[in-house]
Image 1 (cartoon, rainbow, N blue to C red):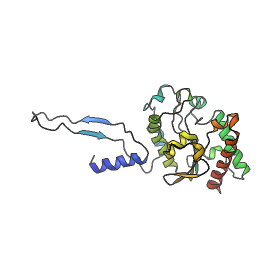
Image 2 (cartoon, rainbow, N blue to C red):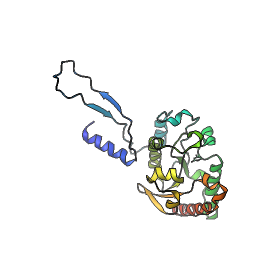
Image 3 (cartoon, rainbow, N blue to C red):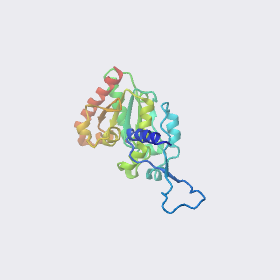
Image 4 (cartoon, rainbow, N blue to C red):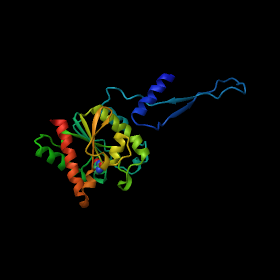
Length: 244
Ligand code: URA
C-alpha cells in the first residue's frame, strides 16, 4: 500500500467515526544476509481492511459481520440482531442494542420497547394520514449483540460495531434517520449531548437529516409522560418530512 493509499484509507475510516483500527502487523522477513549493526529495523506493514465499496449491499454487510467475534459482546449473545424492515426505506430508526427478546429472536425491537415503537410509528402515521406500517421503515441498532444485563454499550463496542451501522445507513441512504435515545445519538452524531438537548431539531449524518428522540424504553417508565408527548411530536415531524 502506498503512502497515498494509506492516507486515503485512514481518512475514510476517520469519516466513518472509527478511531481504532485493528491492524495485522507483518514483519518483513529480514534478508538472509548479515546486516550492518546500524541499519534501521525492517518496516512494519499495516494491512487495512478494504475500503467500503460504493455499491455496498446489506447482504455484503451481513456477510462481513459473519459470526462476529470482534468484541466481548459476542460472549453472551445468542443471535446477532442485524436489523429488519424495508432495506430501501426512506426512514431508518436506530436503537441502542438488542435486549433479551431481540437476542432470542434475532430481530430488533420485538420486546416491550419494540411494541411501543411499533405503536408509535403506526399510530402516529395513521393519525396523520400517512399510509405506512412498521415493515415500511428499517430498524436497527448501534450494537448488534446484546450487552450483558442490558447495560449501555461501551465506547469500544460502539466503535467496532458502529462501522456496520454506518455501512447500513450508507447502503440504504434513507431520506431521514431517527436516533432513539442517547446511545444512538452519540453513535450517529458523534456528540456527548443528551436527548433532552438534541431532540426536536434536525441534525445531520453526512448529508442525511437526523432527528433524535427518546428511546421507547425510557417512555415506558410511568413518570416520563411528558417525554412521551415530546416523542410523539418528534415522530410526527419525521413522518411528515419523509412521507409528505
Ligand atoms: N432496545 C433497543 O435499543 N433495541 C432493541 O432492538 C430493543 C430494545
